[in-house]
Length: 137
Image (cartoon, rainbow, N blue to C red; front, side, top):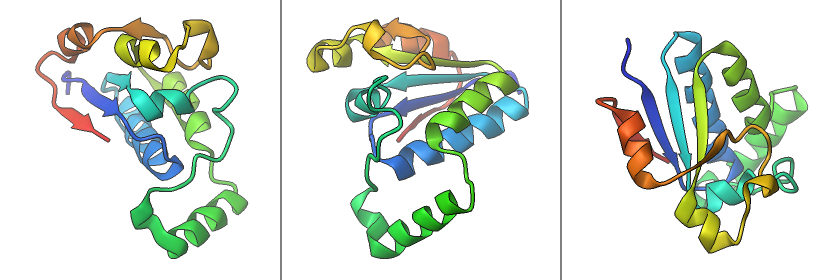
């Protein structure tokens, strides 16, 4: 199980970020390295001043999805940001911001939460992905 799990995160909604965080934690717990590439709206959600804010849910979640997510949060489910932090404690998790998306959003690395390890281009992401599958969320 040496192949990394490679996630490209595009969506910045809380439900999709939570799904990515759970997948990351599961892979890390099994000793599988994880490479995460943050683009556009996912990257925006990782800003230090926004990471704890409500980023809404994807349209398909609907009203029932909102109620379910709120119930889980009330029951103590960790936020997606905290789940990513826990995953980093479990294993090899590398979270990189897309350099092009950084330019588009006018961001510097200092604008990002410390859970983000650095900034790289798409070529570097593909090189780090190796032979592992790439999942786009």
